[in-house]
Image 1 (cartoon, rainbow, N blue to C red):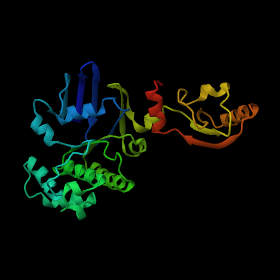
Image 2: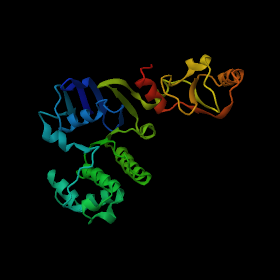
Image 3: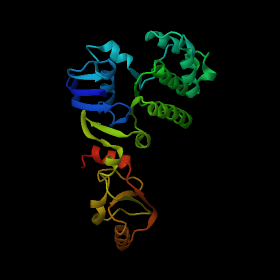
Image 4: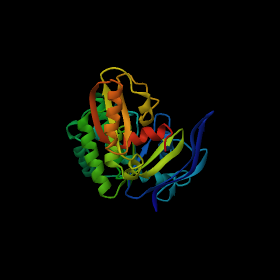
Length: 303
């Protein structure tokens, strides 16, 4: 049984098609990445899965429970960390988590609440009013609220947006532990290095369509070879090298160019062409392709 099964989901907002015939299967125990630029449809899809919005057509089920016809059980199986900071200013952190437990009919849940607060470094703020917390601390509470009923499926919508390195490390250590224990995790993030390090499999959305779906390793292999980053002291890249540009449409303001290199022997040929053009190299780096390179290539329409 899939943790989340998405079949032919469509959603429009007036003339805007937010999702167009999206189908996905997210397996039990996966750490799954859902990536795409702003406006790709990621949050719309999460909202439909969470029951905050309804699809125009298609179906979604969580561990076999339809999110519309069997919504009570579907929502019990799901924990969602929203992108926006939403909180009740009248309660402390502990009171907030106790109330969240009550929504799921959980009594005597203090032991798990204490463990969640400890793992998210919230123990020292347990009796602090929510309105007194920093933005980073409020985001930690949102994560704690999503986990308070021990859901087997966890959805994280930009959970580390605008937060410090300490929170990112604390959060990922705890979430990775839950994933090892069998929880399914679905992550949307603009920090592609996080997705590359954490996700076993990734789907990329563009204009409401799935444009890539594969294991992280297989996606990275789509870009063979390396990337040669050259920064020129002055002048512009010779036209004879434009075909090698990784981002040909990018506006260049700092004379830094990223070139695709399929064989290390090509580097000498590139340097020779730069010398022939009487160009001076200020800096040069050679690195392997990563998920960001794949993302940019796919979003630019490359194969």
